[in-house]
Image (tube, rainbow, N blue to C red; front, side, top):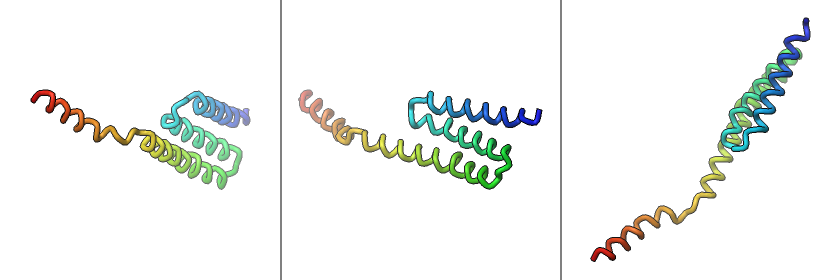
Amino acid sequence: MTDLPLLAGLALVVAAATATVLVRDPGRQAFPLALLGLALGVLFLLLQAPDVALSQLAVGCALTPLMVLLTVRKARRRARPRGRADAAPARLRHEEEDRE
């Protein structure tokens, strides 16, 4: 009976880890990753390690998902084609020349 909260915490960790692995888009993966950090923090708290739980909450719930989101944002900016902004005015110029 006393192991019930511990088993519930382990089940929460397993569910959050599975959800994190199943999400393929890194931008969307940050949310299940934060839930995994929260689940691990709760598990550490149940195991009577409050200092580790606080560290896990800070790193696992806040910093790691934030770093993932910032990295994905920067990678998507670099992958965007750079000539697209200039292509629209050039196309319009050609259409205006064709009309004349």
